[in-house]
Image (cartoon, rainbow, N blue to C red; front, side, top):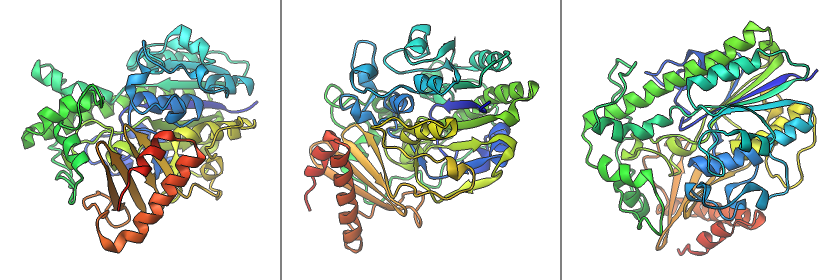
Length: 445
């Protein structure tokens, strides 16, 4: 019988938010164990650093723009568009894995086509048995009980948790005097890249202080409300924000432990493939920012861990191969399940990388958000932000991982800028990303 597959997603967890990846204050023993027994991929990015579009990609393997040009959460509202079935003819993840002989189940956060927590109706629509619509620890217990059932076929379980997304409630909870008592007792301080980036674009400055565009034409939601206030925060408040974020991260680690304990309890840990990732990150005080939505590493760069049965390739850290979790998860699942990838998907399987074997990985990957696009190459990150005009950013991530200096206007990097412009334009045309084509056409030297 094929091995079981446990797919775990967190929400708003940036790639460094695990103690094994360099986080000094949040203790994440479950994540650390899975990394020690599996592979951690250190170059994984989301398709969009906002919940709804990123989750459309998880469910379908398509970039968000495929769904009527989706670039933000707005089109995921219950009274909005699009509905997945109206825009693609490839099967959703649940139907795909069910066709491969898996008992498919889903518990926790959905945030796809409207509902925040999964519902029985939506679970059925997407090809899953409904387990729970809770997004916190109750969901962990429900999913653990599913794992412990007697199964006459391999199971595929998507356990979707909301934490550490509750950091989005920080402002309201603080104003109401209802912040949780943090389990982080140390002074977490400020990040090394807390100051605004040198040669910052006007777009980013407006984004940071909450004055970018107008709300009706340029939906920014929580980002705008936070930015207006956070631009006035003192150091103590920033540290409190970062402390509470880590508190929620430790909750997340505890939830996931329930699932690992359940697998061990029934002797199925070594017969289960475990994949963990997040929809997007949190700025965590970097560049004076809260929340998400930009292409800075803290927002767009996400964790990815894969643990294979019998600890195959244990303790490996892959810091070379670029992965886009929203497009590459489904091809990888198909590879593990020994079925064909649906025609029309553009992602790449990273199964061989999990097993310690080389692949021809992405030369670059693209990330999307409102009015903007990012192209990540092996050494650089190129960002194109547009509102009234096109503005560019270029970061040398090998030498400036904190993205403290925007090199876009440096004449020494003119050829590199040109190369990345061309790559983004070619990608946009190949993938029929009409928004990206429009934004690239706005560029003037």
